[in-house]
Structure formats: C-alpha cells, structure tokens
Length: 530
Image (cartoon, rainbow, N blue to C red):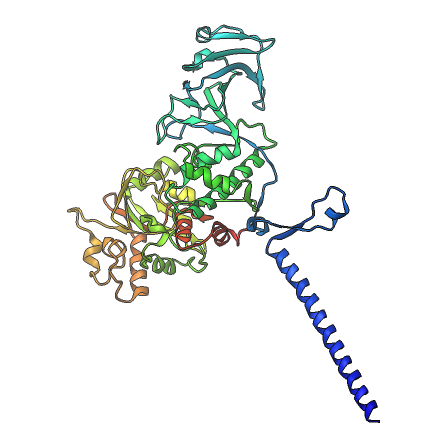
C-alpha cells in the first residue's frame, strides 16, 4: 500500500509538471505571435527570397522598412502619378497684366525657337505656312524639317506683337539641362529663369507667355517664393504639401476647359518664381515628393490674428475684446502682422463710393460691420451716405474697398508699411475719428485717457484697458454711426495678414519651432476641413 501511495504521488507530480509545461508552451507561443504582430505594426516586414531551391524556401530574411507615417495618415496621401506637367501663365512685373507687347529671352546653354500655330484649346501645332515672313526670324539659322520651322540662337531672342499674327505661337525649348531667362521681366531676384519650356501665343491683344514644366520643378520655385528659406524645415515641408495639393486642384479644375494655363504666377493662385529656387526648397519638396492633402479645397495665407480655432467671435463686442488682448511673445513666429492699424480719410471712402457704386455724398452717415464669421472675420460691411445704403460682401471685396494704398499701415512692432492694395485682413474693427475745423480730435475731448480702449496707446504699446469695457465699447461704437465729414478719419484696428483660411504660414513656422512635424502642422490646420 505504501508503494502504491508513492507511485500515485509521483504520477500526480508528473501530471502537474506536464500540465505546467503545456501552459508555459502556450504562453511562449502566444508571446511569439504577439511579438510578430507588434513588429508588423511598427513597420518591420519579413521578405522571403528564393531561386526555387528547398533551402531558399525555408530561409527567412528580416528586412527593416522605414516607417512611412505620411501614407498611414488619411489626411495626407501619395498623389499616385509619377510625372505631371503644369501650365503656368506668366504675368508682367506688377502681376497685373497678362499680355505683352515684347518678350526677350536668353539662355546660357542655348535654346530652340519653334514656330507654329494653336487651336481653340491652345494646343501647339508645329510648322505650317506663314502668310508673311518676319525680319526677326531671318537673323537665325533655319533648320529645315518636313513641317516645322525651327530657329536656333545661343545668345538672345526677341519677339514683338508686330512679328506674329493672331493665331500663331512660338515654342521655346532650352538646351540640355538649361533654363530660359526672360530678360524683359523683373522679379525679386532679377530676371527670372524658367525650367521646362516656354510658349508664346499671339492673341488679339498681345503676346501671352506660358511656362510648361514638371510639377515638382514648379514647386521648387513656389516654396522659395511663398515661404522664407530660413523658416523651420517642417514648416517648409507643410508648405510643399499645400502647394502641391493646390496646384493639382487647379489642374483638375482646368482639365476639361479650353484654357491656356492651369494657373498664373501671382498671389491670385500661388506665387511662382519670384525668388530663385533654393537648395532648402528643393530638399523639402523632394522629402515630401508626391504627398498631397486629401481635400477638395486647399488654402493658406501669411499670418493669423490667432483666432483660427475660435467660433465665438461673431459678436462685435466679443471680437473687439479679443483683438485688444496682448498676443503671446513670439506668437506666429514673431510676425508683426499679428496686430496692425491704419487710418483712411473719410473723403477717400466717399470718393470710392462714388467711383465704385455711383453714390454721391458729402458726408458718411454710417459705416458698420453687419456680419462676422465665428472666428471674427468681417463678411458684410454696410455703408450709408447721401441717403443710399451700400452693402459689401465677402472678405476680398471688403479688403479691396478699404484699401490703404494711399495711407500707411502701422504694425505691432511699430513698423510702417505703405502702398498695400488690400487691407491686410478682414479681421478688424473700426471707428470714426472726428476732427474739428482746427484739426483737434473730438474723440480725445469726449473720452478720458482711462476710458479709451483704442488707438496707439492701447493696441500698439499694450496699455491695459480700464473702466467698464461693455459700456465703453457701446459708446465708442456709436461714433461709427455718427455723421462723418470729409476731414474725419476712419480708424481701423486689425490683426493678421491674408485671407485667413487654411494654414497660417507664420503659424506653421511657430509650430515647427516648438517641435511639431509637418504632419502635425497639417493636422492642426486642416483636420476640420470638409
């Protein structure tokens, strides 16, 4: 009996050991499975190479794959096309006119000028018969081909409206690895050099100039022109993705239209080749190659007034309180455009009313903000003069009407800027500064210094607001509705520079300086976009 008990205990012990071993094996296999799953999530892949032998089939080679967080982010994805050509219409020195009387070009590596015609969709057709010969073309050696008329020069070339007939076109092809310099144009860095090909179309009103080049080459010159090269790299990467997305959307919009170009080189689209492409710009464009935002609309602008994620500033008093707040030191990468002010003579406003809307008046009866967006942008401006009321709707139209072109704009750091064609932004509020016949500011006599909540002392020098803000704001707002004579001034207090939609470029720089990646920057500005 005793031996049986011992044997029974041994059997039981063996069963326990066996069971424990099975449990350990189970957890070991589970751990291995989970570890492999974690490796797959972290970007490690297993690749099997084989030439058909049994030995190769059983061999596993672990390969490290660089994480591509861009591709895993639903907001940013590859565009899916290896090479895309974009057509850019080139404007004059002031970015106002799109037709020229004369175009002159040169190139270090030489270029070919090919004559032809174009159809109603502006497709270039090489060669054909000319009704008249041009003296200009006789200066260059003609390369005889079956249908094409080709002229070569290694120094310079000039064409005028008199030398081409309506419906004719020229195609300018640079030598290997070269660019074509348009010497009749002036940009910030001098005469601009263009990658790709140039097309000159003879229209009824003059010569149109179009640059056709690879999209990535185009972006080198956009990033250089749109954002300072000293900005943090991650901000520049965000700019590159935005610029690529914007360009592709413009191309898509023009796909089925009979248009000469997809966009032009001005701020109406995005600035192109005002600055020479820098090494930094090439670096960030290459680093984000083909990456785009998965949005149907993309916008960006210079500087925010710091209200981009606020939705409670549609009321006048709330926006005025917000704009009176002192921005954090270094906000928007230190841009002085965060706060600004300007004065426009009432006489100028009355003149604009007469010129633009045909309203003739000697006094301004009322000018007021009737509607704001949730983040404070003015959307509807109402003006009454001479018994007539005019409503101006939309931020661009409002900024254009209140253009400070003939006055100065004072920035937060005291910098004075002159000659702006648009009000810096539509994030502003205003009041009438009434003056007596002897030049005294009547507002200064009506309100004590402690009650004033506007003017240089407060917004520019950061003097604290005192008194009952609600009462003061209501009283001051009444001045805007009072009759204003020609000697009075419309004082405008604002913040930010640009249309205020999408990504703030200086805001992106600030985020990058604080350690944000370009994906985090894009997420911050565009994650709520429709």
